[in-house]
Length: 383
Image 1 (tube, rainbow, N blue to C red):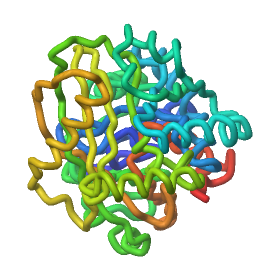
Image 2 (cartoon, rainbow, N blue to C red):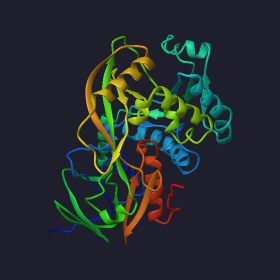
Image 3 (cartoon, helix red, strand yellow):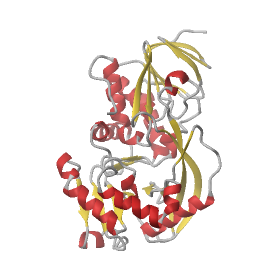
Image 4 (cartoon, helix red, strand yellow):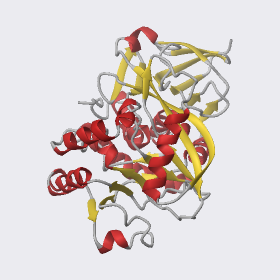
């Protein structure tokens, strides 16, 4: 076996791994990234590609999302990414959902500087030529961005490779320890090792990760096309998301939405469904999602869950959908906070997301973790 030296060795080429690679590369470090599949296939590819500021809970997550917003602009220019920067729309379909958006705009949004505007009346009626007039209001999150992950991640990899980052795909990392990683391509030495292995809690650092008591969240996802074309340029959510996202979920008005769901839509609560829609560059829509938690992601989708998602999307968009593709999203979930930065051994650090918000905060988290490793700043903490 040959020794291969580098300053920073990263396990995982999802958005967290790439964020740390970019942060290292920008500091002039020699960086290697190892990915066991031939291309990234985890949460970063399977989910929505939404980089949301508006939905983030006050505190570390909001700070990271704001930092990531600026970093996305920088990386987008450098790597030639097609980033939609028109923001997000959170539609209120009921009186309770509208009251939530009102309360957020008049309170937390003003107090903490969330850049939003509430669309009602003519502003809502004129949105997309009246396509959304059947809603009561829409919260426009001005700082929210969205990418088509299937294209964006390969572009980021190509950019980083062109800047000197060395990628090792189809290469399994079998073990990591102080200054060294054993892989199927041999043993590599490194000044620092960062493990960004997503929802895989068994392959590396299993004992240390088990102490966090994480789980895996499985999502049912769809790609679809509207029968009546709509040139959607915003990420779309509904008031259902207000009981899931930290910017809203602890406000008193969220309780009325919870009661409404429990009373009128118990199947949505049972399957953890709240609607998210992301447009692709090809005129199609990525639609989801449900939430099923466990130690592993079971391979079996439920047709009734897909039907609930389709019904919600068709009502929200005001049109019929043709489903083109179905798959399972997945992400690591339910740890001690929204993310963990875990010193696992001398020179070995694991970075894990415990929510599906890697696109929203990952670039900032990578920047702060690498800075802390180099003594440039404090370690990121989730609370």
